Every structure is written in structure tokens, then in C-alpha cells.
Amino acid sequence: ERIAVNMGGTPPPTEAPGGIAGTGISALVQISAHQQSQRDAPAPPPETWGAYAKKGQESTGVIAMVDLLIRDLEKEMTEAATEEKNAQASYERMTSESAEKRSADSKLLAEKGATKADT
Image (cartoon, rainbow, N blue to C red; front, side, top):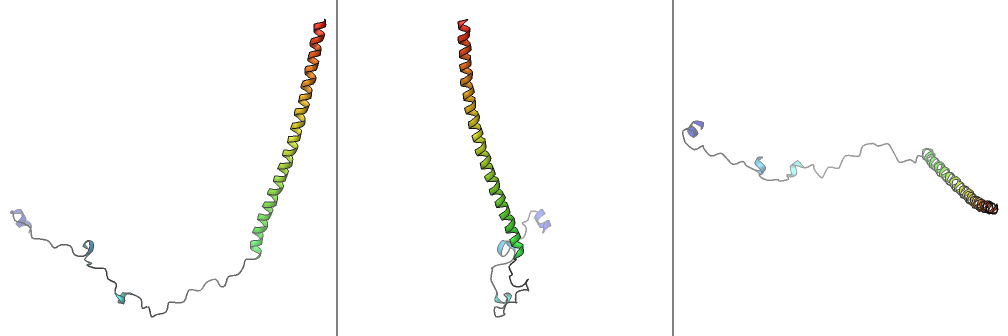
């Protein structure tokens, strides 16, 4: 064949690939012989760990821990609210004392200024 092509001839025709995507399969068909017989009953399921049983004490330990966390959080929130209330009262007391001191200082300064003016 190569010699014929080199001498100016044409190569012999090649066969076209057959089937789907050159695989040789011409059609997709389902054959009942390849399927498992539907008349046979399926195999029983494999053995498992047994019937469901509640955990009991193991789950109550987790629930108790969550309850403890909730109580701790509520206690901390109460303490924070009390501290905030006390801090607010202290701040208000300090601002009122500061206002009184400023007014007393301004009166004293006015008196000193008046004394200087007289002398």
C-alpha cells in the first residue's frame, strides 16, 4: 500500500468506524438475560446492633451541663446589670458633687474678686 501511494497512486479506502463513537456498539439495548431475575426474593438485610434503646444517663449529663451554662449566664447577666446600676448612681452622684463644687468655687472667686476691688 505504501509503495502504491509513493508511486502516485491512491491509498485503498478504509472502513468507516462502526457503532457509537467508534466503539463498535451499534445500539443500546437492554437484554433481560443480563438482569437479575425479579422472581428471586432479595437477600435479607445484614445483622445490625439490635433494637433502638434510649441512652438515659449519658444524655442527662449533657443536658445538665447545658442547664449549668444557662444558670451561669443568667447569674453573670444579673451581676452585670447590678454593676451597671451602681456605676450609674455613682456617676450621677459625682456629677452633682462636681456641679456643687463648681458653683462654690465660682462664688469664692467672685468674693475674692470683690475683695481685691475694694482694696
